[in-house]
Amino acid sequence: MKTREAMAWARQRLAGAAIPDAALDADVLLMEASARSRAALYAALPEPLPESALRRFEGLVDRRLHREPLAYIVGRREFFGLDLMVDSNVLVPRQETETVVERVLDLVGRSFPHGDARIADVGTGSGAIAVSLAVHLPGARILATDISRPALRVAALNSRRHGVEERVMLLLGDLLEPLDGPLDIVVANLPYIPASQWDRLQPEIRRFEPKGALVPGQDGLAAIRRLLCQIAGRAERPRWTVLEVGDGQAAAVVQEAHRRFAGAHVTTFRDLQGLERGVVIELPAAGHAG
Ligand SMILES: C[S@@+](CC[C@H](N)C(=O)[O-])C[C@H]1O[C@@H](n2cnc3c(N)ncnc32)[C@H](O)[C@@H]1O
Image (spheres, helix red, strand yellow):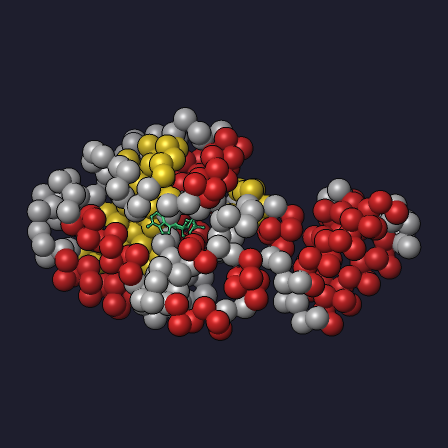
């Protein structure tokens, strides 16, 4: 079979099964199966696809037809310009989370002339936030926690892959509990999907992504509330907390932050789609309110 025919076959099968972005996915799977870059693949379209690559390709297309996320099939996802390794132990990093990274970079740029901030990434998963921050902030110290040991293994691979393992400390435990000492910034993309919404999620998420990375309990804000409670209980509170929240949750998180931290300056920010996606809580410098 010519490479062009294999591509057309896969595009048609995936589109016929209503796979979102069928043509794009078919191309990526064919690049993976034939170990070619996009440019090399397009140059090879008139040539026959070697039998071994065709078999591999059929296997990959079959996995996608079963709704396995593309990122798990190819084992990678691009995030904030970095190639990250992912597997089914970690949430596939989402584009909206890049907005959260931008917020933290902006805060550090404005408040730390030498970039030497101490930052905690709570619920690090693949290490997407922690590794991106470490790459862009060579003077910063990043502490990243997760409740999932297998997720931390993936984060460790990613921090080594991008040469930041010396500055990203990975710790197993509940939210901020594994961390002693002062922190300047806490950033977190914690699970925020209410249990009642689980059945309505697309099959890629429901069947393949770790539920513990997405659902904190019946109440979508349970993990965020507990994090704010831990922050309030710390001897030295972080000056800034940057939280990713679900669509429609920002107002409740802002209210919770004001309730817990008197005198806090609380703002929200939107993702590229214009959805209110994040909350920044700035505590007064002395930080003993609430
Ligand atoms: C929504 S995922 C985010 C992963 C990554 N930060 C990202 O943005 O792609 C949430 C992560 O929080 C972790 N997590 C859930 N509950 C936690 C807890 N109580 N303490 C620490 N991590 C937790 C999950 O294991 C998961 O890796």
